[in-house]
Length: 212
Image (tube, rainbow, N blue to C red; front, side, top):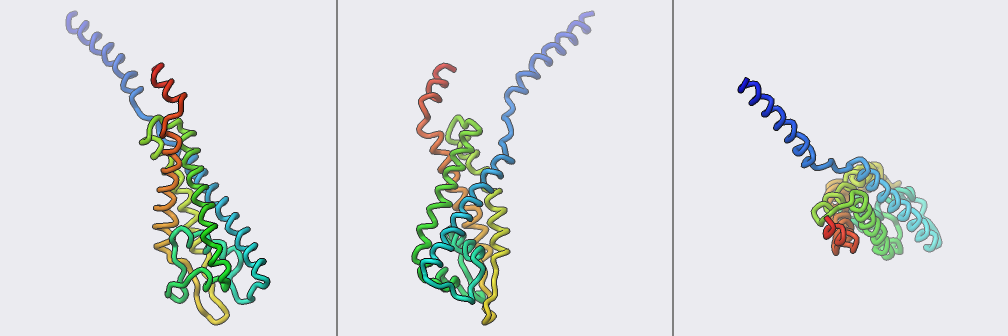
């Protein structure tokens, strides 16, 4: 009987411990939502680049016949502004040379603001979506947007290659596009956006911690 009583006691104690262990498990981060936020930020930046390029070429007065399609120029303008080099037959060239428009080269730095602001915004939004409680959680939430952004960066970079009538092949430097425009810069600015949400703590977070 004593053995049975001890077994029943052990079972009851184990049952009490299991719910406590379950409550300590951290919830999974919303990777799918992060990817959607990242894709949205990229598309917003891309269409801003497309509109920008069309406007600059129109301001130039005439569009040369032998240039890449406008959507490809928009890809070059967007990703080169984030650190991806442009190559002509393997040689590095400036955006203005590749696009046949020096005006585009001069105006392109202003376009950099759009993706950077978009990345900060989605990083902030992800931290808010996950209700990040501190800087660490906010940074983790912000970086979730990178896979979605990276996927479109790689796709657009590969599709934007072009060969001129003189058989000069223009393309984005793939490694630069992936490393800088696809991962490093998006991660830095998305994390910065997440940190903006968590630091300094909004008043309601401070009150919640006091009440807790």
